[in-house]
Length: 176
Image (cartoon, rainbow, N blue to C red; front, side):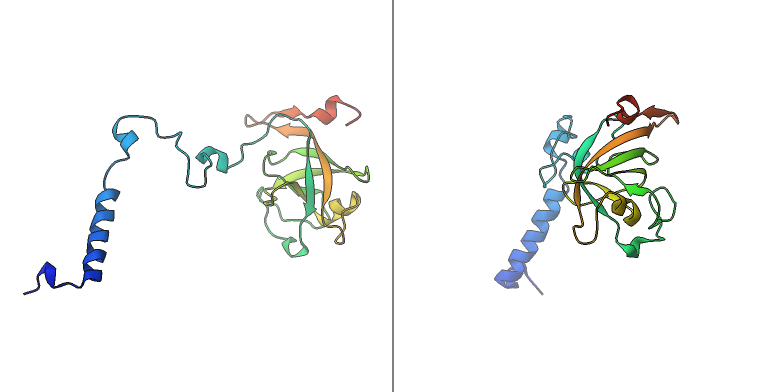
């Protein structure tokens, strides 16, 4: 007959560890058990859960950051709005502007501008605020050699959740 004490020390530690983890896992969160709101607790990364997903920016204000462009292998792939990515089109991606937003993207270095429609999500690189189709990027001086450029993104028309559209800052300020 096998007794608990017949286990090797390593096996005993393993069994006790598993039992300890299982026991802890079954206990309710101390704040939840006391009826406190646990939604404000931070995740292990230090970010609040709501901060991990960017919220739509319906303000219509201009923003500054870096633009990059889609690689050619993304041509023809489905974008977030369901359309196919057109390498020669005016399509662009933004993490925060609503899909369907029309915007003017201006290269700060060259002063060149292009009108785009936000049809996809991204870019997912820190500091970049818009990904452009290769044709749109070329119109403002972004080439494969330089890859990115500091830009100003000025919304012209921002679709709202109720189906209407809000005029962006570009429609209110002729200099933008």
